[in-house]
Structure formats: C-alpha cells, structure tokens
Length: 180
Ligand SMILES: *[C@@H]1O[C@H](CO)[C@@H](O)[C@H](O)[C@H]1NC(C)=O
Image 1: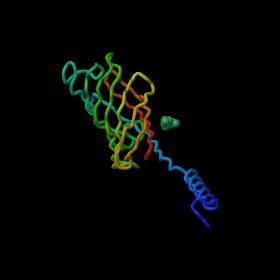
Image 2 (image 1 turned 135 degrees about the vertical axis):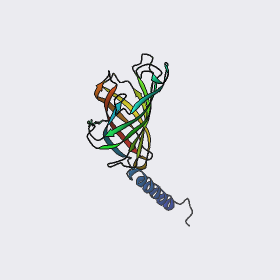
Image 3 (image 1 turned 90 degrees about the horizontal axis):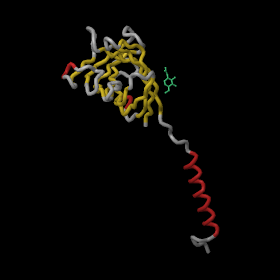
Image 4 (image 1 turned 135 degrees about the horizontal axis):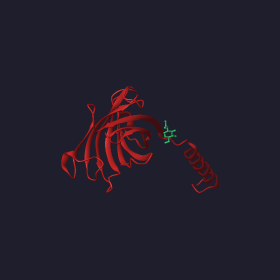
C-alpha cells in the first residue's frame, strides 16, 4: 500500500529535511581568527644610520622626499617598542613614492619582514596612502606569508617622533588582520 506519495513517507521526508536544515543553520560558522600587533618603524633619511634613500624624482636621485614624484627605497628597522634600543623584530623593506601634488602625501608599498619575536619568518604586505600631516592614518594590509598567509586587514599609523629638518621619523603601526 505504501507509495512514495503516501502521507507517512511525506511526513518522514518533511521531518528529515527540517532536521537537516536545522543542523545546517545551527552549526556555528567558523569565525576567522584575528591578530593584532603593534610595532615601530624607524624611517631615517639622514645620519650614519640612514635606512631610506631617494632614488628618483623630478631633480634626479637626490630629489627631496617631500616633493611630488620622488621615489625612495627603504630598509627600515622595525622594533617592538618606540625606541631604537628596543628589540629589533624585523625590517620594513620596499618603497615610498610622493604621490600628492603638494608633496604632503606618500604612497607606500612595503613588506614587514619579521626576523625575531613571535612572528619570526613571516611577512606582512602593506600598501596604502600615508598623509603624514595627519595624526592617525589608516592603511591596508593586503596579504602576508608564513603565519600571515591569506590575511587581510588594516592598520593605523601614528607619528611617534618626527624631525622634519633631518627627515628622521619613528612611526607606530597598529595592525589588525583576519586569517581565513
Ligand atoms: C590598535 O588599534 C585598535 C583599533 O583597530 C585599538 O582598539 C587598539 O587600542 C590599538 N592599540 C594600540 C596599542 O594602540
């Protein structure tokens, strides 16, 4: 007497479907992990410890970094704390290009290469605008390697110290990334 359309099998089919849907919707979705880290970048265009040089621009390789069009290569120390004496945990290597007509904004594209500490052997890829006259500016974290594979995020940059005449600055970077 039982056919697939019988009341009983329809009823069990309904219960089965409802159960499957219920389970599917109540399994907690895996939230991406989040990592927050704060570090300091020492960006010195002058001095015996200079770690940034201009390489091209309107008036050649010696163009001023605060003039539109100037490109700089950087290999800046990255430390745990705000002073250069604090533990060096990596290097910020890449480039800045002055990309604002009035000279007051940089575009940055660099890797933070961790050489010590919790994230030793991993890198973060940072890209974004640095309107350095602002107290806080936000930038994007586009990717990473090692511990930071597949990450995406953002960071907030703050000038900790600035000697504009000698082009020496210490920048605090506060990065938040999500791992997928
Ligand atoms: C880092 O930034 C987050 C917001 O993204 C903020 O909640 C946190 O207090 C900041 N940490 C430090 C040490 O500045």
